[in-house]
Each structure stands twice: as structure tokens, then as C-alpha cells.
Length: 194
Image (cartoon, rainbow, N blue to C red):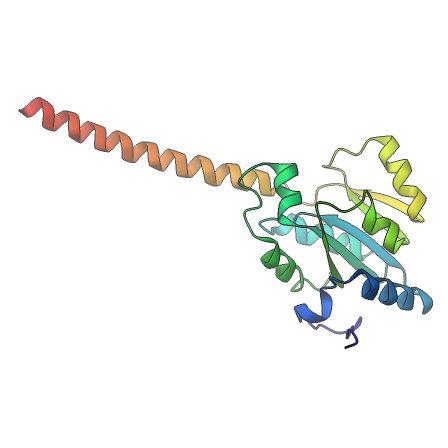
């Protein structure tokens, strides 16, 4: 069955925007390039989607006609960010991005993929990378071999997923400590009465 793709619509249908099969992706990208569309690629975890993510993707989309977003699978996120991450499982992260108007195509990035696999496959006109991710000059130079231009965007908000996770953990730990203290105080009071 042929993949339906409507570049000019507001279709948030996940099945029409998520492309798992690389052959389908290549055919679609080549078709879009064939009609003169400027392809933009970016990627990330997009765990606990927040305003910074949305604004980053809007800025990325402004650089071309079609925004392709590679999303790290759960194992890749865990390897990079540690145990307990991602907070939101990959299937849900994939589907959430389908609801952003700026995102045209969603592609999973597997942990065992070859270095720069998506970049080498798509060969976008523009690659968007985040300033908040440490990209050594040598890595950027290597990325430039597979696209016309690499643009580094600054963070689009003061929030980050890691900061939100830390805050949730800290608040949870604080509430737990308060409950333990209260229980310990009550136990101590009961023991001293006897």
C-alpha cells in the first residue's frame, strides 16, 4: 500500500506521517526533492514534550519546506540519558510529534543504527542541530559531508526535559521525606508515652 503524504494539509494522522520503512522514506524524500522541496532534518529524544521542543521544531521548519524529525528509540535514550529515561515511551513520543504542525515526517532512530544513518539516507538540504548538545567541530565537519548546510539553533526556552525530571524527582523525594519524618515523629511519641 502506498504511503499517503499531504504536505499542505493539517493532517495529524500518525499513520500518514510516521515512516518506519527506510525504502518508503527514500522514495518519498526523492519525490519531494524532485519537485523542488527543500528538506530539513533534525533529531532528538523529545521526551516529556515541552514548549522548548515545539519552538525548536517551528524554527527548524522555517528553514525549508519539509521537516523530517528523527526520534531516538527508548534504548538509545536510555544509553545516552541513563536509567529511568525516557519518561515517555517511544510510541507515545512518536505520536505526540504528529500533532505539531511543523513536523511533516517522523522517523525512528534505532540504537543500533550506523552513525549518521538518517543523515546519510536523507541527505537533507539543511541539518538542524541544537546548541545545547555538545557537537565538536570535527563532528559538525563530518555532518556537512551529507547535507548542504548545518544550522545550530540555540535553546528555545529556559526549560529542559532533564530539568523537569529533576524537579519531579526532587519534589517527590521531599514529599516522601516529609511523610517519613511525620511517621517517625509519631512512632517516637508513641514510644515515649509508654
